Length: 390
Image (tube, rainbow, N blue to C red; front, side):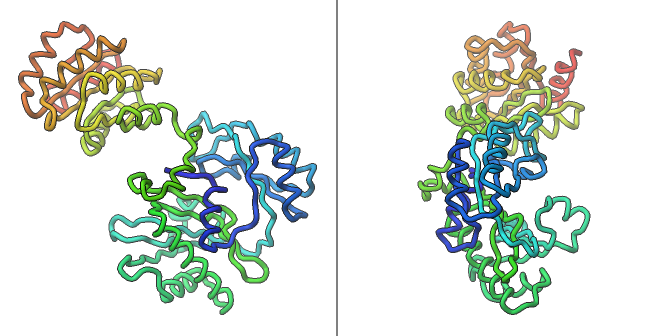
């Protein structure tokens, strides 16, 4: 789960992570009132969406007067913001964050993420703040500092010194401040079961203080039960409506840009299925995991969600019958086609318990647009051919 910048800064504040003062607003009058409550003479009007690159997309602007706050709020609130982290359709701006301006002397990048290879949290930092870290990694990898933190010992002073030296911070006061900042941020990460915290830019002010000018947080969904206050921050309007609907039925769905709908049980099999479709010359339209208890209702709902995408030209159902027998899955697929109007070819590959019986059931179903795949490669090839009208 991701949250807005203003929500991340609320969490930062609980741990003493320094940030400029700011107030969230959902209307232009509220934005003006917020600016009046904050110190000037410069205010920052920020769009609140779950995506980075807001500044480059026109969603972050400086105002030098209360009247300019009003004008910029009118421009940004209600706009559709397109950034490198949104789809081409962009995201509707429904919230603003009005923030005090700051005395910026230097900008840095700082984040805490999980390094799966090292199996421990990793602090990632760079002197190239305010830029896409992916571009820095690709073009100037030597400018990225990485400090792994063994969870058995947690953040220690030597971690902080390694970070400060890596960023070229030599002033003793500034070193003390950046170490304190990183230590508090790491505590936010560990105590809230975060998957990622990103501060970009982290700024150094004229008096040597460090402030989180921007903040982004993502959380481990499986741990939200331990954090009801964070779970309450979820903004469904920022999430894909189909993904939210799918979750209600126990389906894991992610929309993609291809033309072949995928319905699979198990995340690993789903990834392998999408890779095979690509290998065969097609492109997947979605990731859809129906889990280990596929039945007529879940399959029907899966078909319904997949077919909301007008680009889908065929559906590849690739299910391994382990917990549920293949013959039951086959009957479920047939029933699902009666519940939902499936108007594109459906290629079905079933393997596992009672797979031969399932194949016979599907062949005898007399459904014109249902095609049986013999194995993963054959099924993917038939799905690609069907999508191309071959």
